[in-house]
Image 1 (cartoon, rainbow, N blue to C red):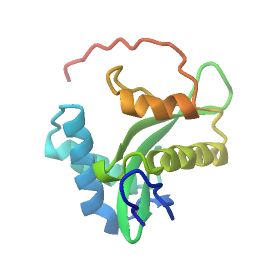
Image 2 (image 1 turned 180 degrees about the vertical axis):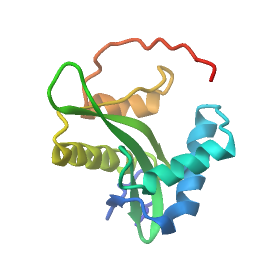
Image 3 (image 1 turned 60 degrees about the vertical axis):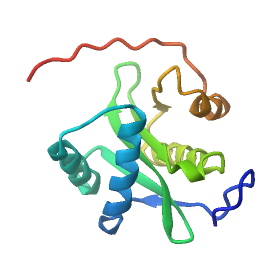
Image 4 (image 1 turned 180 degrees about the horizontal axis):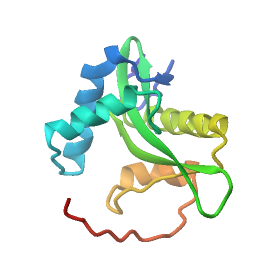
Length: 158
């Protein structure tokens, strides 16, 4: 149940995304992209959705729901690592509905990824966020260690 302002978000259930969650996932995905001021071609979003439902893919999604509504999503990827014999888990995308923020949805999703990573034998979960994302960083500082790395990137034309 989504409580009033300043109250905790109660009865959060996390679970793997299912085909019937598509409309909710797409709405939250659009919010996530808007937050980061990013536009993706529709075919990329369609491909991402198909990958999330494909058991053969290393890309996964969990949703957080309460009272029959989905309040948040987290997309994550398992991959091999060069610093360990085990795999790592990259928490790629995390987004909660604005009205659910500060009520435990983000924390529940992160904890669910930790559990999925442990079950899969991964020895590390890591993620990136923009330095200006102060609200999310308060949560991240509480649930993980800031390793202090700076990201560099170069877009390669296909």
